[in-house]
Image (cartoon, rainbow, N blue to C red):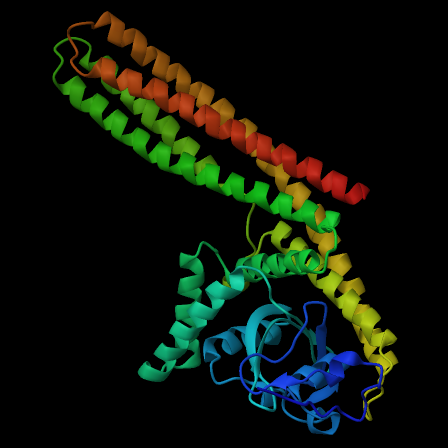
Length: 422
């Protein structure tokens, strides 16, 4: 059954959505093209909001103004999510999070919230989540909330469990998760509204994918160089059995080990680094993508705020729109700065990969010496031929890894230049 919705006095008669009947249970009516806006003081007391918030939350404007924002908190929400959100914004960082809210009539509605610290408080915009990530988050939140209740977990302990699950899902930090989520929701929203993909946002997402490829190839290289140590150990074992050439094979193994050690040291530096900010650590491209998606959403809610014909006592639309406008400029500038730093990182990775390749050439010369010695000892060194064959395969594989890293670094440079050209 549906029940009629009593509109707030601030609703204009032509606002068709304000007259749509609400169901008696389940989800509150919430369209994909709508965006929530609210601003609170430092204590979380609501000081401004837009029509979307009033209608979907089901409160009259006088009930929202000066009310604590937790008036819409749903009991299904794990405390961990709010702990992480507050941890970020209290550190001066914008934070994105999936949140299940409760309307005044008991209905619920899911949002992806973007909360930003501003002078005197916090500003939040929220969109309707429509990507596949929502189903994953719903399941994770439900399981975590059960544990919070059953085990009487402290918020910080529950937050660690949530971070562990985020890591298990393949995200190195909460910032990485929130960036992927914001991008997924922003692009899904555009598609649901019949809009074309945002080319500038797509550029930066491609850069992030190439950065991830570099990280994956580096991890594969690290694993392979660890395996190479077993080859030199086997080389020494074979040398013990020799009556002729024992010293030569031992020296070859020793030289190869020394080169491996040098290469592994340089390999540690071959990556696009993350900021040292714990759960909110990020790469430059992640930060650029997050801020640009945030700017796009802020810009849209700012325009809608100015076009909104509803006036609520105590809420000055022009003043709030100015706040949103300042954040748009701040986000856009931050995104461009991070992107320029991303190209510097890509150039550095390309340079380091070239240097690593030269070290591998030196390593390869030792491998060739081993092959020559194996030929000299033919028939007298059981197993050495097999070791040489494995070394050949190892060098072919790492050459392929290095080529992929160089290609990805070059692709990042091209994408950044194309984005800046736009």
